Amino acid sequence: MSADGRRARAGRGRGGRLTVLAVCGGLLATGCATMPDSGEVQVVRGAGAGDSQVRVYAVAPRENAVPDEIVDGFLEAMTSDDPGFATARKYLTRQAAESWKPEQSITVLATAPDREPADRNADPENQGRAYPISGRKVATVDARHAYQPNRPVEYAQAIHVVQEAAANGKDKEWRIDSLPPGLVLGEADFLRNYRSVNKYYFASGEDWLVADPVYIRQRQDPVTRMDPVTQTVKALLEGPTHWLRPAVDSPFPTGTGLKHGVTSLTTDDQSTLKVPLDVKADRFGGEVCRRLAAQLLVTLGDLPSVQVDQVELQDVENNVVCRLGKGQAAEFEAVRETGREETPYFLDEAGRMKALATSGKEAVRPAEVPGPLGKGTVPLGAVAVARGETRAAGVSKDGAALYVSSITTEQEPLPPVLKSAAAPSAASEDRLSQPSWDGRGDLWVADRAPGHRRLFVVPDGTGKRIEVRTPWLTEDTRVESLRVSADGVRIALLITRDGRTTLQIGRIERQDGTDEQVVSVVDLQAAAPRMESVSAVSWAGPSRLVVVGREAGGVQQIRYLQTDGSTSATLVLPGLNGVNAVAAPHKETEPVVAASGNDGIVRLMPGANWQPVVKSGTVPVYPG
Image: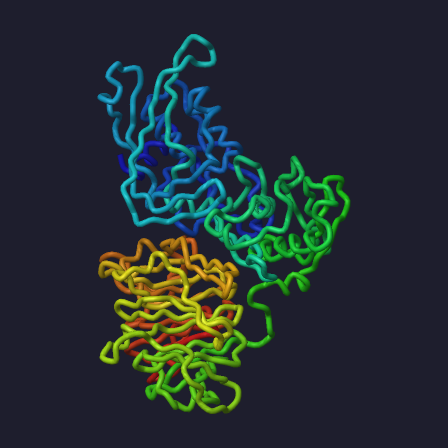
């Protein structure tokens, strides 16, 4: 039976759910405090991906409900906000209700799970009925709230129903005694109930923070009864996700958590959030407390529902251990606010580096860039700008050599810091990739030379190059391009293997060796598994990317993706033909810039459409 068919059956009062759309007009600010107490349950065709105002109320099984209704009602009840999933548990046997752990995991399907007719052959003694449920699995969310996408694959499980003695001890009622682990939700219901937030942890041995995206409930969590602010604090204290853990530090003592019974955290009239912890002051005082407060402030800055200007951490006896304000926490961010706009750059038709002024509604003439890279001493095919915007790196048009130069003062051309190992007759695509700077000031580049494919990092852009350890980089694998995050912990890679170019996120790990630092890129994770091919990528904030690619059988798209691979239909940017490069700023208030084979360099201001800026130009970049 299709999901829509299942919902239609539920709408006629057999199992199902009651859905209320919170369109309360002027009452929206205070919430919808009432719900209907009469009238029929309405047919629901599924919530849209952006319908966060939709509330679903589970409906308990009716007396003498048939097995089909029990299964359908339970599948619908899983999508509700019912505290403790109490109504959903009424569809289970007493033993199954006690053992079911909805917080264990979430299986995300492309659409609501399909329920097929009972498979009577699966239970030949006719003691119960097994109902196959199926769909296309697109992701899972683990107990640490980490989203893990995958290419859509067939999902097949079963729900088993048996007869159990009713509460009166005389009659029997059909109930579910065996079911898949955790929650099973269609993507629309998942996005209606959950939202992505960034937790922040310190890069190992450093003083700046790294974003770690997770999913929390949009409203009160049915299991913990915590509001979104408290859920977020709890998720931070539980520690980083398994993938990020090897590259970050958590300064607070092991086992630190919220004080028992805390389910709601609210700010006072000074926008101060008081956080009571279950740990003694002597275990997290001083700098440890200050750093934890910074993590909390930056993390809560991602929540639109709360304005936190100061955090006050309290010990188990409610004594104040430390306070920290927003301004003090800002010094720990990987990209610090400078008060000025980021400048995008590009290459003109002669391979000269130019600065692109994009302020205001009208485009202005590109500005000359001082130094050899702007003079065209060596025509360039790719460029990257250091985050301080005082230096840049350029790869020659033939891909043979990498140069670093000032872009604020005039200077004589310097020798290349790196040359490709490719033969003189090699094509440019078999030589050096476009470079990228991390927040440390180190320069990254891939050499795509056949037989010598390697990844390099040049400390400070001028030091002795380090060959990066890349166990995944084999001769049948090409790094088409790379972009390093501002925190220097993650790297976005476009990798071609078996004729398909995919977007992968790798974790950067550093260890001090005997002679030099050992740098590795490990544990690659697919960030856009539903795209058949990806042609361009740029960082667009602490954990967000702008990606150009195509889904199977589809047209080219430009869209935002989280580094964990999660996305939403609302994050697709306006269409633009023939995009071959894209660059995004760190702040959302500044324009995305792209290179189109049809229109040259174009920009996308917030809330506007694409606007041509320079008719002839390539390789737009923001610092990084």
